[in-house]
Amino acid sequence: MRIAVIDGQGGGVGKHIVEKLRKLLPEGVELLALGTNALATAQMLKAGANEGASGENAIVFNVNRVDFIVGPIGIVVPHAMAGELTPRIAEAVVRSPATKLLLPLIRGQCELVGIRAEPLPHLIDELVGRVKDMLVKSEGRVRC
Image 1 (cartoon, rainbow, N blue to C red):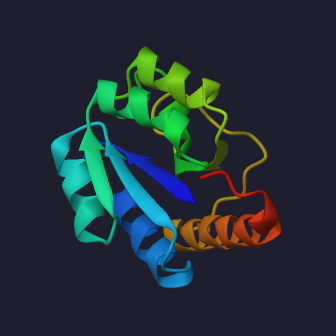
Image 2: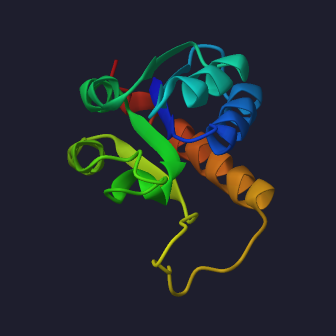
């Protein structure tokens, strides 16, 4: 089972996601840190990701090679993360056959109506719990 964690800018959200996933998931689950920049990737690698890659092409190439994609919702919004999220990355993430679990974190002139305001640690706990539940349910159908 492979999970891509995608983040940009300073990589803080991705770092926290990787730390929580690493603690809760079985050893055989691979975590792939995909950063829009090297700093974000490095933060996720320090947090326990198995491997990492940075930049547009690395993200576009790898999103089709994972079972799950996790990160902030900005990873499907062109020009999010202060412009680091390119239209090509957003399209690749959306088109990927991987299951996507996205945190409702977005800055700028977009608002997600109907989403409850929760502190980031609570949202990450919920995301990680959902990944764990989905892994348990799909054990018999795991794609390698």
